[in-house]
Length: 249
Ligand code: MF3
Ligand code: CO
Image (spheres, protein in one colour):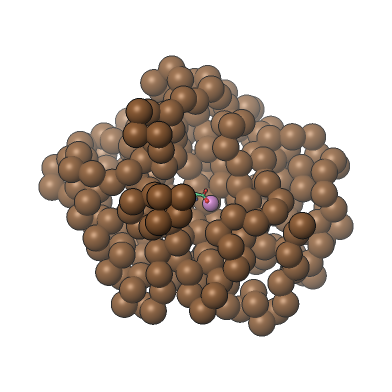
């Protein structure tokens, strides 16, 4: 069942989303080769979220141990921050959810660690642009698969692949609500979009195969071929006059 939000509820989600966006900005600035570890970033994220009056949505969710997911290079999503030292040339996806006043916001960015290869930079750019194209399709009267269709067409045109096994999601009082939001599909099909729906749209884009597998920690998802992956996410409200990104500073 898809839960439709009132303007008041969407405003609450915007406030949660703002904390997500500001915290992600701080984390992105703190990321540097050599000295910054996932554990430090995770502690910084948790402190900033709590100072803003929120709670980290992921911590304790199905037993997840940390406040952020930090997924490096061939890690697609759900990397657990640990003592690993970030290296010049890595790409790091930072994913954060915040609950504030009963509602969640959820967003992710993939950022360069120091200077990165032109290839890696292109993957990041294509993934970010694919997210923005998907968001543009989140309009009343459209169909759910307009979103994934736009993402998939753009990604594949650039020679990359879209992960199938993980998808975006509805979001609100719960971190994960209906519907599932695939990053692939046939435009004009699927659920009819209406105003008041709130979706976390989160393309995961691989340089090589779309196939993924899990590490023995049972959280970290990695590409099956070990090639690079990128991930960008926004929480979006479908409004009468079009999509509103809620995870902006
Ligand atoms: N953005 C991801 C999602 O919405 C992160 C979830 S991590 C978890 O699925 F720990 F909360 F599972
Ligand atoms: Co999400």
